[in-house]
Image 1 (tube, rainbow, N blue to C red):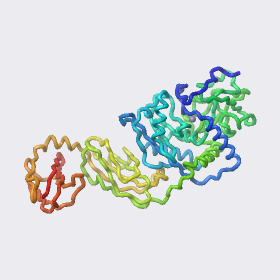
Image 2: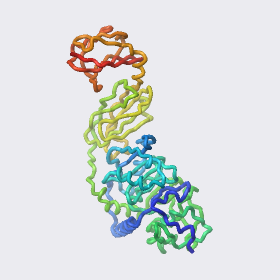
Image 3: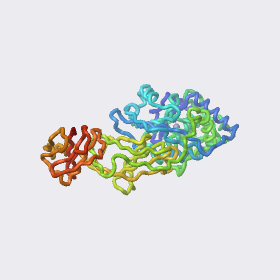
Image 4: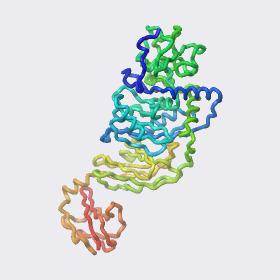
Length: 489
Ligand SMILES: [Zn+2]
């Protein structure tokens, strides 16, 4: 009765067993998870779960790159994916939020995954996960899976192309995290269902004999597959024919299969159904699991006092010219009740297209890859992490600055500029330049603008009102720039 190809016992990671286009997830629940699911269903059946409006669940996103720091996903994509996750979990009553700063991790083993180096990868996962949060690592792989939940380490991996405002992969993996099985549980290692073959009554999967679920709800839906009777029998993991399965599979009694293609725990997420949902039983089991996961459910409710004040930019603002060769540190005023600051950039002052977006939890942020010779416009939103998706928060004014290659300009045209005397106790004279139409600044050696009164002549600067100390004197024009260190006695 049992078909030979069905007796595939899956290893801990069944990553390479299939090259189906639609392979969605590569997780295999272990025995412990099966017991958890059975417990969750039984409790959910006994007690209609009290569903609060919202239970807040922190997520820790970890952006991985290769060893050289290349390949990071845009943080705006993470916000998109978080908001999609919240949309799909709205009926569940769980609301996810970014629980802290987004971590970056340079690790080719995580970023460019292969099923072969899993033990080394697991150590990196363990070292970089945070307690009391759902850890979601975002990376890449040339293998054919879009994500997985790792039951031993209790972490989620998502391939970065599926981190967006459309795909349900993250919602699916969070479903596994909260104990759900696939609707087609047992058929994971069967690369494709052949309706010509007689359908077996049992399969072997994860080292266990699994009863095949019948279409008729009165036969074995409580003990078979995902153990839920409100998810129809499903054996399919490779359907790509749209949101209506017509492959002709029948159950062991010969009854035609009619799966729920919209179920988030099925594999029809590439069938482009108009909506994706969890069943009531799935919702119940997830809520029980959440309650038992005290590491996230017993956390103090996040403070939801609103942000009422907009941050104000400190640096760089108002046409500042910055050196594109340097890292640029942004700063703004700290705002009460803000958990996160979203720094947004756009190529003009219209702010229709946001070209870059970063999320930080401090009123400062360093940009390390300024584009060449560009005018930047930026603003910062102070938000509650619990309503990042509602586009709310208090927004600063719009600021602009210009990134220029100051080093080469200095080297090229004004390198002959000399100053004397230095040290000085009154006037600085310049050779090789006139000060007409130039912007003269005295800054601290750390770059802060000093508000000293300085009078300039055509080729002299009066520093009589500047207190004793060492400063940077910078002279700028539209075309060029020079900076000299001066000492005032
Ligand atoms: Zn899955």
